[in-house]
Structure formats: structure tokens, C-alpha cells
Length: 467
Image 1 (cartoon, rainbow, N blue to C red):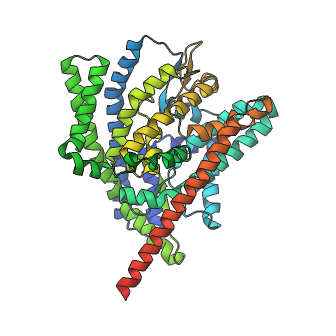
Image 2: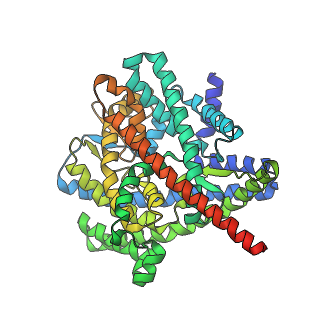
């Protein structure tokens, strides 16, 4: 068992830029792609992942430093250090039972495909750490209630539920994602999309406001305001504003403007690499499935970066930063200082999907969403710190708490990790679980209806063409 754990951890520790392309290479070969084509697509996918990671790191260094300066100018000290998602991943992998999550995810996916309960093949196996994270939080919360054996069983049961929801989310989002990105046969199985269930009722209200219901994606904005909607101009203006708010010198402010402009120009270029890599593999998988299972389509589920070419995402991310800092200052009970998670992708990508890229509604939803992330980050800090200290995955000074201000799917993770706290009189997780479940149900209905209508229109158009 220990040997299996070592092997699995070694493979997964290669990281997404190596591991996910390797899985895609194997998938390509299984569906009879030529080795040279599958290898070329896999390597291109690895290049895309590395390119996107480099750009995000570049933005965190530039924009994150300005955000930290803004917070320092307030003079407020918050006690919980924001370690970002990388720290959470390192701590999660150090959990003693982490290795068992990989076969669980693969097994659940295979069973659901065989039973025709999903059409999504989740190639995003590197992000299995998200299930590990949920599981160890469950163990931390429920061990005092049920004992170690039952709490461990419960942890893997909830992790299996999360795996199922990820596959279902991949199924229901695929049509909208394909329409937004132009990449066929690909979907997102990252748990960050779960937060769309929380956004959905707010978005329904915003749609009733005429000003919020007008076309406001990047294309529509370019048609209205011309060059001022171009990525490099938007990036430069936002960078300049950040520099001014942070109190930077003129030279440093101008440099931040150019850095932000550079990032917004390069993101769409990197996104094209994802399309170049994923299109041939997804088409080969679709052809293979049509031959083996008449009329059945198989979607490839991966991490969010293939959507990173959307200008709307990066605009909303940057605009959300000052509001994140404001919420950190005024939110009652918040103790986390946003820093490593200040570029909060998990806040914006769900808003992008729910609004279909409407920039104004994305910004409004992100302002509404920030408190959930700060609340959950504060609640999880003791458990995260305890595991980090016990496993020595990271060095944490005595008396210091560590967490993450951008925990993926915060409401889902908190609700189902803390669910049994109602036995101790804490009903907030139960209320969150009901809220998320109702939101997810109605949001799923909209997505499925949208997909059905598109299929009917496609079928009608094909009939007309044949006639």
C-alpha cells in the first residue's frame, strides 16, 4: 500500500504541465490517433499550461505587490496569512490518505461512463488534490463527533460526491463553454465552477435590470468604445489606476500599466495554444465514441486555463482586487489578509460562465462573491494550520495561522465539510448546503435547456440542408 502511495504521489507531483498532457497523450493513443499527432498535441498542451502559469505568476508579482501596498497603507493587521492555492495543494498532498483519492476519482469516472451517467472523461487528474482537501477538512471536523474510523469513511464518501458533481458540472457546462471558447468537445471539471450555483439567483435578478442585460462582452465593448476596449489599453489603464491607489511613483506606476497591458495581450495568445492542442484530441475522441457507441459524445474535462483567453475574465479579476481588499477591511469576523490568492480566478470564472461573459454582471457578482471566500478562508485556517504543522509540508511559525483567500468552490466545500456541525448547534453549513443545492438545481436546468435548444436548432438546420 505504501509503495502504491509513493508511485501515485510521484506521478501526480509532476504537476499539471506534465501530468495532464501525459493523460491526453494516452487518451489520444487509445482512440487511434497517430503517435506523432497525439504527442504534438500533448506537448502543445504542456506548453499552454506552462505559459498560462508564467503569465499568472507575472500578474501576481506585479498586481499582487500593488495590492499588498494598498493594504499596508490602511495600517490594519489581519492575523491569518494567505498562502494561496499552492500552499493548500502541498498541505493536501501531505495528508496520509492522499494517495487513495486518485484511484477513487478514476474508479468513479469509469463506473459513471459505463452506466451512461456522464459523458465527461475527467483528464484533470492532477487537481485530485481538491478532493483530498475536502476529505481532510471533513476528517478534522467530524473526528470529535464520530471517531477516526467513521470520519475517514465519511470523508471519502463526501469526496466521491464531489467527484460525481464535477463530472455532472462538466456535462452541463460543456455547450456553454464550447460556445464561449470555440473549442469543441472540451469542458471544465474543476470544482471552481460549483460557485456558479451561488451566483445564479443574483444573476437572475441582474438580468431584470436593463442596463445589466445589454451585450457587454469584449466584442460588444469594442463596437461601442473602440480602441478603449482593446486588451492593451484596458490593461494599461487598470495598471495606472492601481499604481495611483498604491501610491507608487510616476515611473513605477507607468511600469505597472505596461505590465498589466502585457498580461492582457498575452493571455489570448496562450489560450490559442489550448485550442490548438485540444481540438484534434477532442475530435478524435468524438469520432471514436461515435464508432463504438452510436450517437454518444464524450467530452474531455480539464482545468480552467483553456478559457483564459477571454478578456472579460482578466478585466473582472483586476477590478475585483480593490473590492476584495475593502471586504477584508470591513467584513465582520474576517481575519485573513488577501495576498497570495488576490488574483482570484475561482471568483471570476464561475461568473464568466453564469453571465456568458457579460462584463458588468461579472464585476457585480464578484463583489457579491468575495465575502464567501474570506469567510470560508477564516473558518478553515485552524484545520489547515494543524495539518501543515503535523505533516511539516510547510514551515509555519508558532502561533501563526495560514489559509487561502481564494479556496475553490468555498460554499460547497464549507457546507459539506462542516455539514454535521448542526449536531453542535451550528446551522450555517446546513443552510449553505441547501442554498447551494437549490441554486445548482435551477442553474443546471438552464444549462441543459440551452443545450437541448442548440441541439434542436442544429438538427433542424441539418434537415433543411439535406432537403
